[in-house]
Amino acid sequence: MNPFEQDPTALRVGFIGAGRLGTALAWSFAEHGLRVVAVASMIPSDAEKLAAPITGCSVVANGQQVVDACDLVFVTTPDGAIAATAAQVQWRRGVAAVHCSGVTEIAALDSAARGGAMTGGFHPMQTFGDPAAAVRSLPGCTITIEAQEPLNTTLVGFAQRLECRVNRLPPGMRGRYHAAAGYTSQFINALFAEASTIWQSWGASEEDAVRALLPLARGTLASIESAGLAGGMPGPVSRGDVGSIEKHVEALSSLGPEVMEFYRIVCDRTIPLGIRRGAIDDESAARLRQILRR
Ligand SMILES: NC(=O)c1ccc[n+]([C@@H]2O[C@H](COP(=O)([O-])OP(=O)(O)OC[C@H]3O[C@@H](n4cnc5c(N)ncnc54)[C@H](OP(=O)(O)O)[C@@H]3O)[C@@H](O)[C@H]2O)c1
Image 1: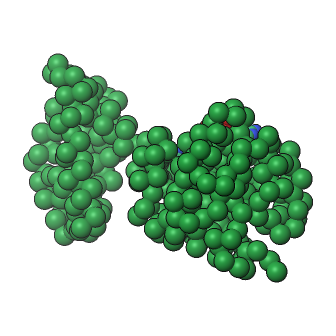
Image 2: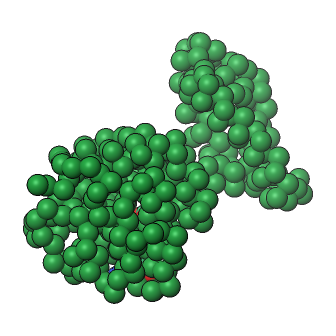
């Protein structure tokens, strides 16, 4: 009988790569009743750290031993090493190879597929630094799954056990999908950095700026959560306040073209949201665009 058509808690799960994500995922799986039985990594002490809190999880010498001992193998090496890691191993029918990269196509696991394995993607939309903190932050996150049946059903079941939402992605979309995720991860840092540059123009420190701006950002996120992107947008564009934007443009122009250009691009993108909200009509939108291009 195919193990993927049986109780998911009976599946023997293994990890190749005991880094930030592999460790957090292995700990979460074990906490939620899944059977993590083997791990291999480059540095044995990293594999030992992953295995330590999991009853029945063995540290093995290499990826081949993980595959030999498991039904479902998570290849959690860095993106650039996924294909090479999979290619170093002899796969077999009835086993599955899954990576957790957002941007890497499932084709990186083609050598596993040629060896008879099912292949798929299981990408948690969360940042993994400290594994213990990551375990706590997983419930409520979205996990993007790309796989054929019966692996798909198994991975969906795993995500649900972790109390995560499931997102599906058609093949070939991972570049777009991962770029989009960047807008709510590293680009938030870029927005804070830009605001902090402006604060520093009157002598405040980056720390002052970040401490002051973080609660504002949290309030905005809460507002998006409760009222949506257009309904939950704060700021002058959301109020149709053209006069305030005019003052911003005047003030930022003196800080140089780069500061002004960034403000123009971002502010431009808030105008359709202001229109959707009903706060500005086409005429004031046109005026705003004109002010931004002065
Ligand atoms: N971190 C995140 O926030 C995050 C979020 C979503 C998805 N992901 C995805 O998760 C995957 C892993 O990322 P990560 O952040 O966990 O990376 P990481 O912390 O750098 O860990 C990667 C691990 O892979 C191990 N490794 C590298 N080459 C190996 C090989 N040939 N054989 C066995 N082990 C090998 C390393 O081993 P040693 O420790 O033993 O040297 C390291 O522990 C990537 O596909 C990434 O895109 C990460």
